[in-house]
Image 1 (cartoon, rainbow, N blue to C red):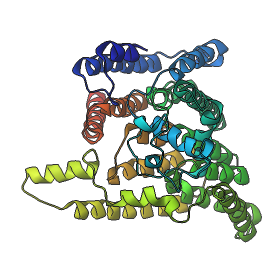
Image 2: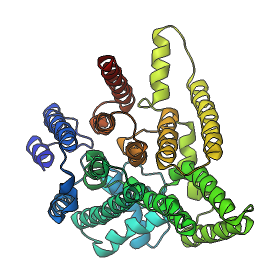
Image 3: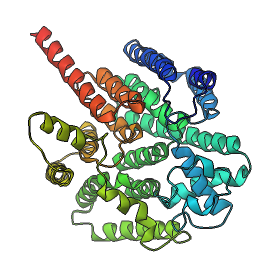
Image 4: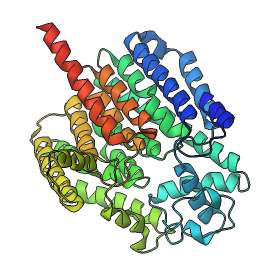
Length: 430
């Protein structure tokens, strides 16, 4: 709440904050938060997470955060004005854009005036609900949208805990805290109100049912995650590989009927969700527009600048498609390695997912926001990489500090710090 106070005191209106004094306060708060998070994980009492009081306090803090206006991004307002197209004007946000509604009370807050909705239909319905309940109250719409996301966070933490319970690792409490208490998760969902949280919670539910070998439920939850945000598609082939292999073992033959059943069920669900909103292939116009972008906060741009320093000049197009080709090679290897797995070792699966997302970040040339880092967060925790508390803290706060600096350079710095830390630990061990 101190962020809101300093913004009001300084008269700051920009998202993200631009005034030096506001940024200084936020940075000091983040430094304190990073230290507190790291020390909390290092000194965690496992019994703490078995009692109700800490979780109730956490929920109470979340409810307070729901009342905050967005601080680092205006995406929440973009969601809501598109929800108003459906809820107030009864028009599909895939076929209309905010510029068509200059008299709407949220029009002054919209930046992407000529972009139709770029998310899946499940999110369209979700962003419409606050509009229906609070059609004339901006504060009410913001509060309810965030409150819904608080419920989504709770579901995500619940399924994450269930996943850990299946794995039965000794330091389960530490891993749960690394995810459930993570400031990246809380800022993304309850300060800025990003929809990545909903995609992630549904993906965790899908993964839980996958490892429980309840494949129909797993693919339904994956489809629901896809119908929020399409980027979850990059882990679908791994779900298919593991599910088909397990069914083949169970049946003693290739599971053709199983595959047909899953296709019919989930394609049918997708069609049913899109049907009332469908605007032809223009439904995906916002995504196709992004294919030509080459933003300055991406890893390919950082590489371009590094090459220029040594006298090598490569065009944006060459770098963009070069990174995509490299990712294609890596992705093919990852699928091949997953297909060769003979068992169902949870850490290996989580490592596949975390690497697939991390390498995907390397190829992004569209606006790269810290909320994208949420996609890999649970998999990084479950992957059990060395010095995981250091890794997760650096990862989370490289993202959070990027509200005022380019995320690409902060991620490169975080990677250097992490590997430097590992090197020093190994040197001391010798």
